[in-house]
Length: 221
Image 1 (spheres, rainbow, N blue to C red):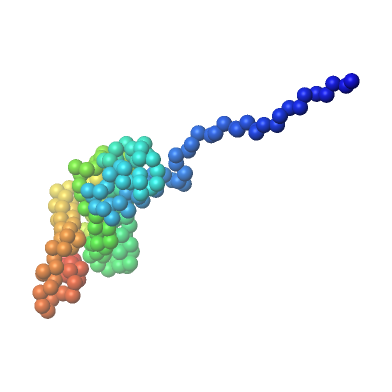
Image 2: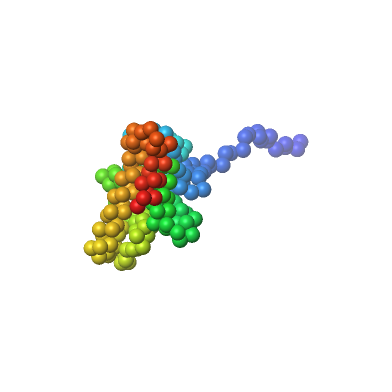
């Protein structure tokens, strides 16, 4: 009698080992985190801008912001750097549209444009105590916006390579002119976004809106 081979029970195929989970699926996670940070800033203000809130908005692990930026000061510095680059672009856009006529005033209007479109980010950019002010990206971005604003009086600062200063080397006259231009336009922007000019603009027979008042002040420079 022929021996029949034992019947082997067919079981389920063994599972392949699961790949380690990949926590980040964004095309560019740092950019996604900065976008999330700005969203939180616009929605919840500076008090609500925490690493956990940023991670939650981006839909990633709560450790992701720290992994890429180090700490809260690092995230805020990168966000401020983004703001300075966009501020420089806003001034450049206005200057280009001016076709050379009243270029300084056009640059000042561009400064105001940025502040009114991004009030919370504009305020953050001046809060040095919250920022990693030595972060290279922030130093470079501040140079860009400083150079754009310096062009109000045709005196772009001479910045040496490797310098950590946003303003570079300037003579006393340039320094005075820079401080004057900066204080003038930054003060106007701050008063405007903090609604401090509403009463003045509402005086009968004067200006339709606070922005109209600011524009008139710049045009009288």
